[in-house]
Length: 180
Image (cartoon, rainbow, N blue to C red; front, side):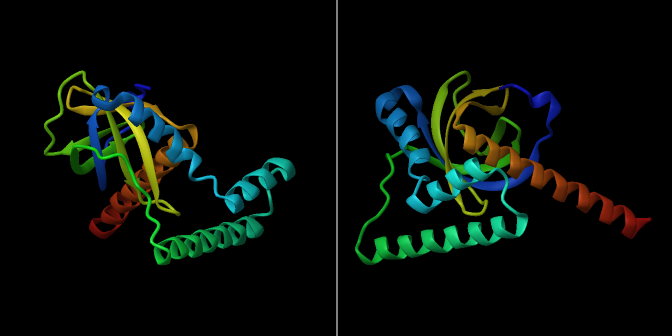
C-alpha cells in the first residue's frame, strides 16, 4: 500500500485509538471484522443490494435514499440509547490525534510509536455518515502506513483525503486571487 509518492500529506484532525497488534491479536481481528459487518444494517443492506441489481440509480433518488437510510440509522441509534444499549469496542491502550493524512498513510500528533511495529487502531472519519474505521498500521520513518483496511473503508478514506486535497487547492487558489 505504499503509494505515498503519489500523495501529499494534508493537515486534518481526527481521533484515533490504538494498541500494539500482537498484544491482543485475536480480539483485534474479531473487532476488525465486526466493525465493517455492523455497517450492514437491514436498510443499508437493502440499499446496497438495490444498487447492485439496478446499477446506478438516478442521482436525485440516490441522495434521497441515502438521507432516508441515515434518518433510519439515527432512529435506531436513539432507540438503542433509550433502551440502554451501547456499542462496546475493544479497549485500546492509547488515544491520540491524527494530524495529517495521505492515501494509505497518516501521521499522529505527539505519538510515541515504535518503529516497524504493527498496531491496530480505530479512526473516527468525519464522512456522512461518520464512520469508525478499523486499521492495522506500521510506523516507519515518521509515518503510520496502513497495512490492512476494509475495501469500503479504503474507498471512504481515499474519498476523504481527496476532498481535503480539493479544499486545500481551492484555498490556495483563493489566496492567489486575493493577493493577485
